[in-house]
Image (tube, rainbow, N blue to C red; front, side):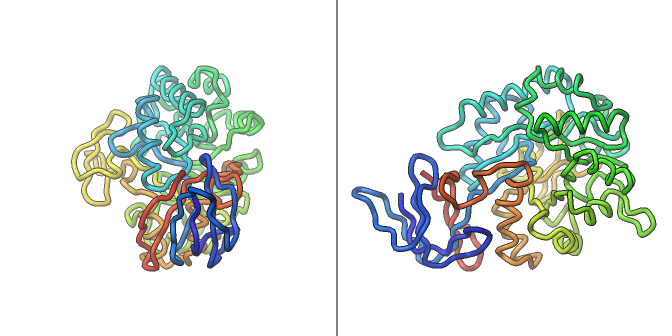
Length: 374
């Protein structure tokens, strides 16, 4: 397939009059004035924006399917996310029993090893539990929380540590220093979230190797001028990538702008934190075995606590540009290249030779027109 005359996002900038060739699931050529091969399908972009496929490093579920239910649901998520223009993702777990967590991780492994032909690539699991703080449980089930250790992680994964790409922990729990050091040595990115940590504890965890903050400002100690908490440390420590949920519910527009200005497009990571109602109508759903009530852009437990989001990556990108005033080139980066880089992914999130052949076309008003894939 040859896409011609696009305004393509390449190397963090838009380039007009760009042609991109796709073959056998990857980008094989990027240039200008490329000639179609015999019998090759040609897509005329006519100057529209051509973007890399999205990379979502924190998503629990979508369209009625949930990571915790295992392989079949993760496969369905892969297929559904592909239709949204997502090239790669981290299926994200909730707190649960050892058996339920093993089941989810085994499902992640199966889809990693045997991917869907027309699906977003699974890059590994993001375990958002169980090494979290009771006081900041959010929609997580606190009865499964415990202190971090590699022995416990091995038990939770059935020994398949290589299926885990990222894990969220509360750095104030006992055993954190040894755990972070060991996890990072194993190639796992450690994020701080669901935590009541002080700013000093956050910086210390970064010294030990943590490089992420999970859904910044949500389910963590607040920003105060004398006690800057997790957000204060996150915004000022250049070692940390900061996740953000731009659905207009989880973060005030000024906080979104503050986070962007503090971290820049190089360190601000757009996520959906989506639950199973993403892409579905309002109604009653589940997250981690708890009932969730969805109305409009909000997903809440019966208590009123936010329970993930119903956000999709295309909506997040459009929100950032059209609602929150983030420059388009930076907004695209925060949805594609930056999340990929934040977990050491070298192919997805780019339009470059060898990158996934999942791209999206957008008009000048920033409405997504179609997903282009091969």
